[in-house]
Length: 492
Image (cartoon, rainbow, N blue to C red):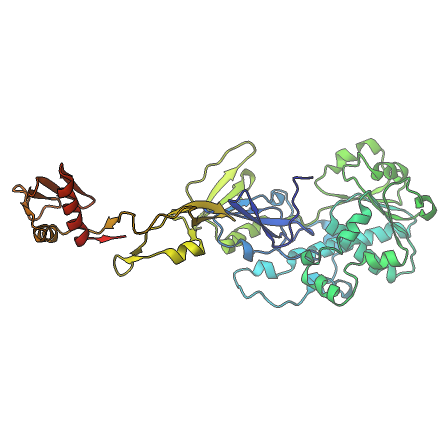
């Protein structure tokens, strides 16, 4: 745990000087994050399972992920067939205008998003179906309780648990039933306290409740009224005194191989009045084999757990990456024609190499270095300056910082640049009293030329488009030629 660093919402943290990491909401659960990783040479979006509009967590934050170079798409939920509606759910679907649902953040009136390219973020279709699904589960729970049976819910999704308790609270208030609800988990108290400590991760309507001094979730009222009990273990002190059947129990583990769920299922598996609620896709048939024969009713249901396959392409159209890395299983589900980004497909144990994402490198100058610059104008668009610095990498970007020792400006040699005009050089040499001429074999239109010096000493100046070289054995003569060159070209 000494290596674990906690990060606040929207906080930028630096890793190893070169990577800047920032978490933003994925919309799936409180604290579930998409990540932006910035470096001097690339920007990467890590996109795990995400939900665009949430009933409890802050909505998916697409704005912070726009136009990054690479998207590592790690949402595998669309590999499952989550688009098929459950027949029972369709039969018992609720009216979207139901007053009990309008109080939740799903139906908030925040106004349409200004960006018309992201209608999928603004519509509530997916989360409306989720609320309808959970409402149907609640109706099944109350049906079992009314018949004298108890309900076992070994589901670990925090958002689902919060919404279940919220709807159960509404139904308890509207009925005369007095049914105890038990949450049996070693982390039960911490989990429910956790929901009150992260307001920045809550959806907007929950945040408004916070500022209004209202309870953020329905379980708060259940705790106050003594209808909800939290215990770490089945053998906890006080559990036997509070225990009453029929009851509703939320506890681990979804595998039905460990935790309180094993003991409670053994107690109720032969009672046809009781109900077991399990999540689809966790191998319920295999999990239930040790408890056969079963008389208990089993409700297997799926929950919204990520981006649906039909919404991947519109999402990429908004984020506008250069490369998209998808799991192999999604290869046939995403359109690759007519899109400006490239697709790469990854699988377990496979290494993928990306080409250089940025041709240009951005370098930041330290303030003290910038003030010491003495730029010389080369042309209308370019100026050049000479500096001595050290290159550092800090906070995910290259920086030129001041060198420890700065050279004496008066003693350093000038660096010369610009194209040399041979005619001007010949005139400058003659002004210094030197006898010189162009080499006999030079053509007037040639890109290279040579100036032959015969007095006061023998020398040759070779001029090309890229370099100028002085060939001379006499130091005094070479210094004179160098001075003449300096007078016809710019130096820094």
